[in-house]
Image (cartoon, rainbow, N blue to C red; front, side, top):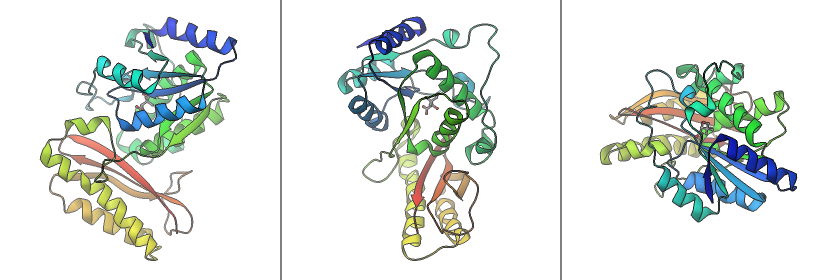
Length: 280
Ligand code: PAF
């Protein structure tokens, strides 16, 4: 396994394609965890070569967000990648990705104006721009994303379809700690008390699932229950708690088909997201 900058990674991927090898890409911002590892393992099973990109993409962070404190440790990540059978880590510099004069972007409209897009208005344009660049540079057959970032996965699928990018987007299940907390690079910021408080996200989602199983179909009732659970945790402040259609990401009133219950909650200074699919 080697770690490559922009020109080398693009040349390697191009040589593989010429040999007829299928390339799987796992885009990440590093500080890898079991969620990433599950994406890498799936990519390993389904492709001849696997590239993991590690790039903390500055343009997807807003001015008061956590770009500076986003955890970074390339050696630690490389050990995970080696163990999981990655062929190349693509680790570009910000200058390589956004050289002087850079001024293009990819925006997806309505899907990015709900949920996280409301409090992070430039976020998905930053994500789509970097993912579009990764796809153009490496031309993978498949790219792997986690269901934990459900809105990101929906937006990337839309971009790929709208712009005929010809990459298969594979979305893999959320990986959780034993007590239900979704694994996330940002969990590293939680102290012991915040770690306990962070469980309110999974509790809120689980309560919605239990209520649906018990026959509740009114989204307002489910949302009331979820919001009460978040509100009862003193260290938590909800950014949003919503029940939406998983394709349009628009709010639904009644649970008549599969819906997405999604939330973003600040635990202290750390903003966590999670979601669950609910089926009547
Ligand atoms: O999900 C992430 O880690 C990032 O948003 C991604 C897809 C790697 C783009 O920077």
